[in-house]
Length: 233
Image (cartoon, rainbow, N blue to C red):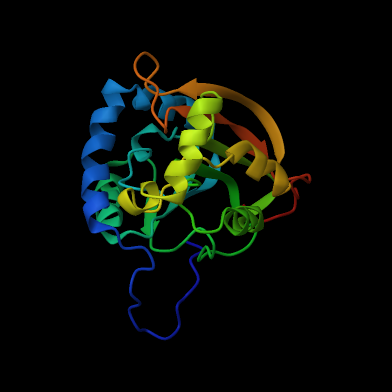
């Protein structure tokens, strides 16, 4: 386990505290597994991963059941206490070792270059500082380490993008635990210095009304640089 010690022994207040939205998210995310096909998306997101993985913004831990047995361990970071408690319960049912820990994406409590892969699943929409969070992802990945991402963001045509920007400036973040619908995850990954691999656009729900959160992207990116064959695994 590569979590950094807090040192002081004091229990800090969670930096993210959205108890009402957390309860709502916990309910709707479970129903989305079948109704929106999220279970299948999680399978595609995580297929083929191996080694040590950090999952950032693990929520209630619905990804844990989909990690392949080639994964040696998962360190799952979740800042919201209620969701983190649910993630711990999911970790106990997982077939791969999962360690759930508090922390925020902008200051990950782990050592540099400690992981083979990072998973970003519906998290870039709600972090306070996207560029700083992605800088942390680069820090904790080994050279050549990969990022698996499934994120929603701007899209759906010009009228929808105008609506998305208006929602982000007004009520949406207040009602949804800090979520934003007009961010550009592909552009953010590219600006953070990641090499983009294959990715595909996904609409959720696939068949149904277009929502501000419908435009999604599923894909892979890499931290530049070749892995060090002498590094401790």
